[in-house]
Image 1 (cartoon, rainbow, N blue to C red):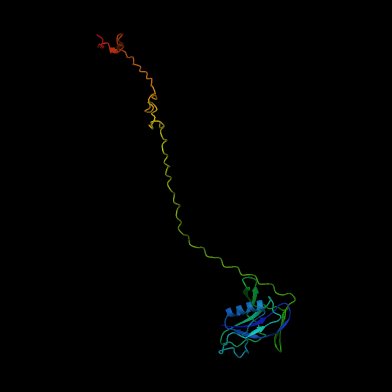
Image 2 (spheres, rainbow, N blue to C red):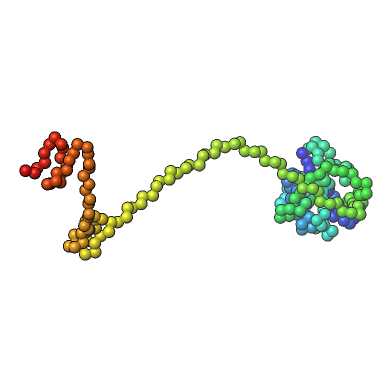
Length: 229
C-alpha cells in the first residue's frame, strides 16, 4: 500500500505552494506530521525530487513552512503499488490531524469528509487551500479498548497461626535473708525462734455404743476395756 500525502501547514489562514509527497510507510508519515506541526520544518518526500525512488539519500532534504502551526494536517491518498499517482485535486481518502498528548502530540486518522466551505485550487506553484473561517477543532481522542479480564486465579486461604499460651513462671517463694532458706508457711525458716506454732484441735467422734473412760479419757467400746488397770 502506497501512501501519498499533501501537507497543509495551517488551517487558520490561506496557504499555497503545496505539493504531493510519497511516503515510504504510514509510520514515517505520522512522524513527519508531528515534526512539522511542532517545528514548522522537516524532511520531505516530493514526487519530483531527483533522489526519490531507488536512489534514496539520507538525510532527506529539509523544507521550512513559514505559516506552519499546530493546526497543520495532511490530506492522505492510499493507493496500491500498481495504481497511478493521485492528482493534486483528487478526493483524499483520509485526513490526519494532531491532537494534544505525549511529547509532540498524537496523530489521529479520520475518514475524509467534504467541506464545502474549504476551497482547494490548483495554482502555478502547487495547490492553494482557502480554509473555513473557523479552524477545525481537535479530533476526539480514541478511547482505549477495554482490557480482557484475567482468568480467576486460585487464592490461598490465610494461614491461621495457633496461639501458644505464654508460659508464666510461678512466683518465687519467700527466702530468708539471714539463712537463705525458703520460708515454709507453717514452720518458718531455719533461724531459731522463727517457727510458727500450730494449734490443732482434735475432736474425738462420739458414737453410739462407745463410752468414755473417766480415768484415761479414751473412748472404749462397751464390749471392750481401756488400758486402765
